[in-house]
Image (cartoon, rainbow, N blue to C red; front, side):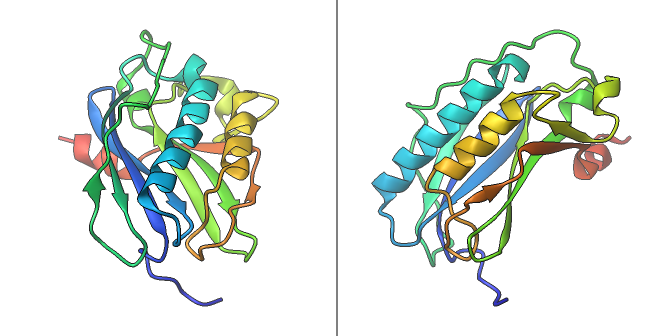
Amino acid sequence: MPDYAPNYTARYKLIYTAAGVQHSLGLRFPAANAQSLVVAAAVQTLNEIFAACASRMFTDFTPIDAEYSAANSSFFVPVGIDDIVVAGTVAAGITPMDEIVMTTWAGRSVGGHKGKFVMFGIYWGVTDPDFDDFAVTVTEMPFVGTVANSLRDSTVVMNDNLDAAFWRSRATIKVSDSWVDARRP
């Protein structure tokens, strides 16, 4: 398979905080899409995802900025967050370990290239025995399938600029190694 430059597609990046820690998440869109199309599609997709995850999202999950980059550019411009809607419901019981758990949905394009969607700020309760295999299935939490369907049904592409049509209907959860290192004394 050919390699593609990281900036081969148009990109949307949301910068947010969860548990007081700043993170970002990104989505790729067809290279030919105009900024307005990318922003509208990203907002729609993220709002669907955030609504699906609301029952497990931290109440302090807060978007702080959004940026757009055209294909073949490494320059991101601010695009605002006015239309992003987040309504997390989990405020209690979040441990320092829970704060740095990342949730990953994995997918592939119609051309076979891998991609992923990674998000912090979803509460899994690291001591819950349902999740001791580090994967969350649709049976355990139906919303993980809803997120996968939202990604599949969106206009999101993978790094090869082809439709991101195939998403696993499960998510993996993992304590972020880089956040563990950052928090170690």
